[in-house]
Structures are given as C-alpha cells and as structure tokens.
Image (cartoon, rainbow, N blue to C red; front, side, top):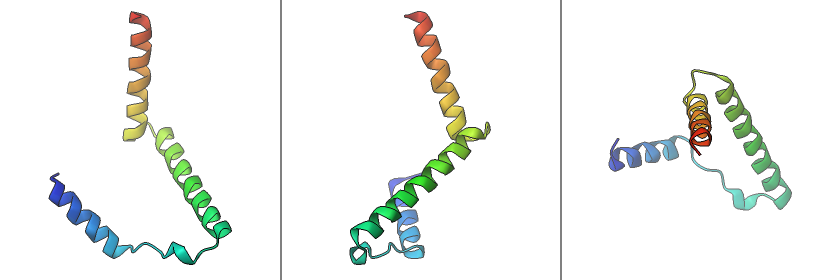
Length: 74
C-alpha cells in the first residue's frame, strides 16, 4: 500500500471516529481512560496470542523458533 493510500485511510478513519477533546478531563479521568485503553489493548493482544491462526501468534512462534535456533548455534 502506498503512502498516499495509507494517508487517505487515516484521514477517513479520523473523520469517521474523531478524537475526543481530552483537555476537558481531570487528571484522574484521563488516567482512568488511559488505563482502560491499556487494559483493552492488553486483552486484545492476549486473545490474538491465544489464537494460533493470528498473525501475532505466528510471529511470536517464529521469533521463539529463531531464538532457539540462535541459542543452538551459539
């Protein structure tokens, strides 16, 4: 995908899902929101790792295999 195509997709996403105005949040509200987003991201990552057909799981398995081979060759 070209850089322009990526930029168009990002622009379309930003128009479809505008970012909230975080300047109106208190520090505690902002921290709670960030922690919620981090937890959601971590949960999604764990689900992806648990699914053997996911790209992330395959990449992790490949990295583990390369690490084992490198240790064997060292």
